[in-house]
Length: 289
Ligand code: AMP
Image (cartoon, rainbow, N blue to C red; front, side, top):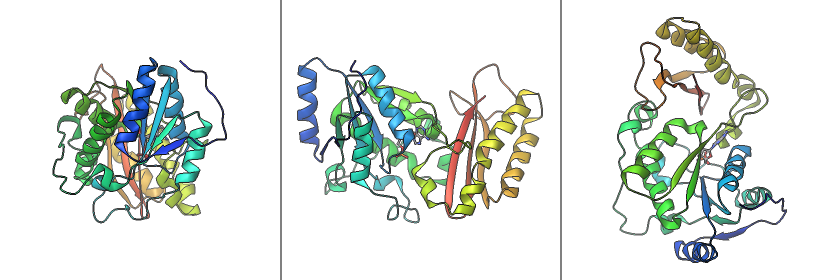
């Protein structure tokens, strides 16, 4: 494994699958292993932590930047999603990233494209109840990115916990020869999980946003202490509303492995997950329990 380097030089950006495969072939011929970090750009420390995790396992790290149209519904923020490729490239470079794959939409979805993966299992419920198009889009693009590069490892954040489980399921079910690695959520000092969408928050909303993590922790503490689960979750949702959230999509306790709903505590890892709206911004977060 290569030592972490700090560089001010931005890595090369490739836009075609053919060129990505050619570069990766060269690394393979030199006996090197590869980790991929799929992102939608607007890079922050959470993304860079995935690059660093990648270098713990592999010789080379490829980051991808692709704002994937198929995971956005027509009323969502596809057009406004922050795009700042040069800044992203420099940030990825600062963590030692070897190559950036930033395809245009038509490289990923050429004319006539007609195939979509529709994951079930962990892709049902929670996010899917509110964003029914989402995991089909994610599964399709992640499968395509992995098949375009065939990395040894692909790094995903626990910040998007359901997505991590869905990707693991899809990769196992489609026999894609990549190990999916989950990495812990990186947070602001006040507990707010880093997210590209935090840029949408007004100063007032930003001040209210840490309530998400506070509510998760308080609910986890109470559930561990034996308080009834549903009452605890109801109190948590009320606290978010008091903090200024206008709508709580869900605040739920689930089996951490299957995401099955839980009415009582189990002797296996559990996960508390939340999605809630602050003005026009939807924040999601989760913690283990
Ligand atoms: P995105 O660009 O938001 O699609 O995220 C790309 C990857 O970064 C996904 O695997 C996310 O789960 C991960 N990620 C996003 N935010 C964080 C964070 N705060 N900490 C760790 N990983 C994150």
